[in-house]
Length: 217
Image (cartoon, rainbow, N blue to C red; front, side):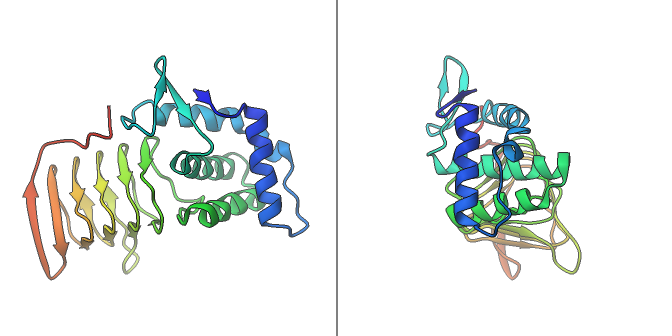
């Protein structure tokens, strides 16, 4: 992966932000991030390799990570928080990475939530991704929400696209290559493969489409 900052500079950049945003006396040291940075960037490289978007360019075939691209950086902060939680259970570091992402990008994805290996944030301001079973090639835009209803959580298939304002809550099994249209709300309802859901629980239409989102290679 080609990086706008070297790994050591990126670690210092993140650490400085965390200590400025959260001056609680429990300072984050470079090694708190640095000991996992190789694994995080490997995950980033794997994820970005399948993205086909002008804001996720490739240089001689290698994905490019730009710390000043907010979508890139939001994905990085989530991946770092999730990986550090799994590897070391360092709640102080994980919580601050999660909160930094929330402060900078307005996205709420807790470090215990397991997004798939391949996903894409597209200017995801106001998006909340909670407990669910996620699958690869997940695309979420702004103001999207995934979460539970009555202690039931969604199961989401591959190639799911959630357009701006889309919501999936509760006991839902969503098949592969489905799209939730902008402003639509799926509640306690299953979708077959290749479905486009438009509407809300009281008034909805389901159309069929086998086309995959152009965001993926």
